[in-house]
Image (tube, rainbow, N blue to C red):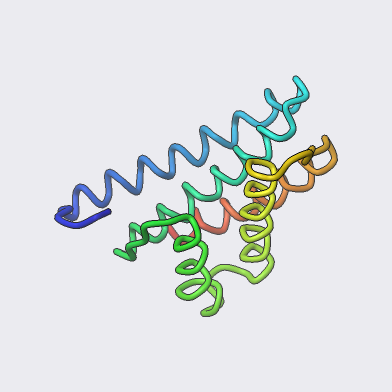
Length: 133
């Protein structure tokens, strides 16, 4: 995915992913207010995915899949204590929630689940931001 990028390109891509993380997180109150809980769950995952991708890109760690992002985050950051185990578990839970809400039948997220996941996603993104600075 990142072959042939210059250092400036890497920084631009990191900034783009960081911005996407924050923009996507900002969508959640709107979605929740309108009762789009499954969509909110999806967007919470993507907000964290964009932040995690930014961290991996900044460190020149290449992945080609969502599962690869999860695995590389665990291998290079959670296992070394740079990202808390709590946040690593939160990202895994969001990954699973997104998978279930997108691909399984009769899965319905609730406002309470969205609130719980929102708090975890915000903490996750804050931790990633501290590593990106």
